[in-house]
Length: 256
Image (tube, rainbow, N blue to C red; front, top):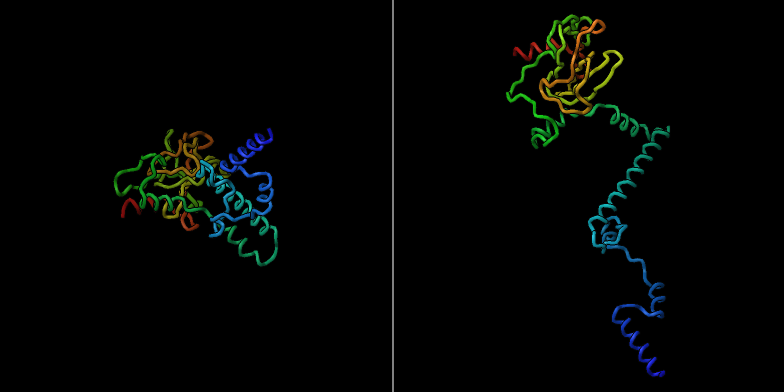
């Protein structure tokens, strides 16, 4: 009987060896002497992978790891900037000035879009194709009407008085950098152009465009309806932080 029991135990032990299952005597030894070996990626300067690389969906594991690392770096960057702005030491004056300029200066959206368009072509589905096929597009006032107030009166823009409800159109292509209400011109749209200039359209009755929208030549921006309280559309052009007479710009471009 004892012999049969020994044979059974021996058989079980052999099966465990074949399956790679450690015995009780060896398991404790392995758990105590097994060192924490760094992954191959760590040896070569790469970040460790927080998820088992032997998993079947390894690409998904790598993506999650990258997201975790980016999140950590974003938090570190946020707190670093916060510490810089809370500290009055002179050593932080240069970083403060740099971050302030980056946050306050207007990004050249129109210039970047023009470069992208000329280099890589128009991105699919990025903006409607309403542009003129001709190489030279003539400039025109945003609405048809009489110029009631000239540039010489206020030094900023002109006031145009349409006689009926009309569409307000863009001077030329660009990117919308403001779309909403302003204290001095009520419903207003400001477009940034590739040459660094901006055109402003104020006192609109309604606005049809949104912030950062790509605008084509003479594209509709909104509508103007004359009323007793508002009979004129405001139009201004600014370049290099100086206002330019819109009538002179349009005359020069129309008659080279």
